[in-house]
Length: 269
View (cartoon, rainbow, N blue to C red):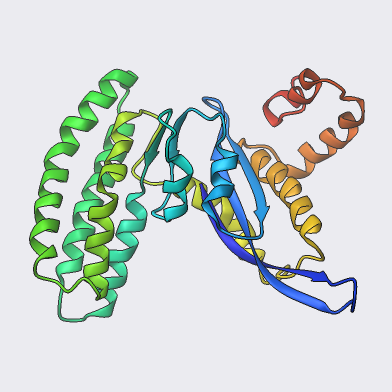
């Protein structure tokens, strides 16, 4: 799950003057096994209540960055296992390494995380059952994680918590239990980059459509983005999918009819 901020424009009825405010585009990526769904939602804030409402009734894993709002969203939800993201930790160590030309300690943190990614690539290249994959990945990751934790605890007492290196260390320690939770599922990886990449098309074009005419316009754009990105994630040409969808949608009346219009079903009907 991820979110980015964007602008919205509305007009006050009493004076018809533009009123520029910030809004947030939220994104979730998931779906059935072997199928991918990308879902955009627009909200006027980044309050955790929006994620909480979205997750109502959900059971399973939720992989996010370290934004506190997600902790609020899963609070008192025992059926949701909150998983962190090593990519966000790595990003902070990378920023710390660039900030100093003398201290190379941050690069040690990057090396530990790189070893986890190398292991993930190696394990994904094997033909293993899900149970064997989970067992072997956990066994191979354990010494890497133990070494990383020992290094973090040692450096924590040597580095001021206010500089970039200190912030990277404390972020990683605070997120540790969530970040290693990916080891519990075959379908999880060390990061939520797939979700981050899914929101990238909106980020890249944001300067072209910084302003939405109204909150309703922003919400409408979410529907189009959800359709287009879901089609792309499942290997379909968006234009082909949208054409088929718009031709058949007027005749849909039941939930079964709408299910037939999902990207992985529409061309088989």
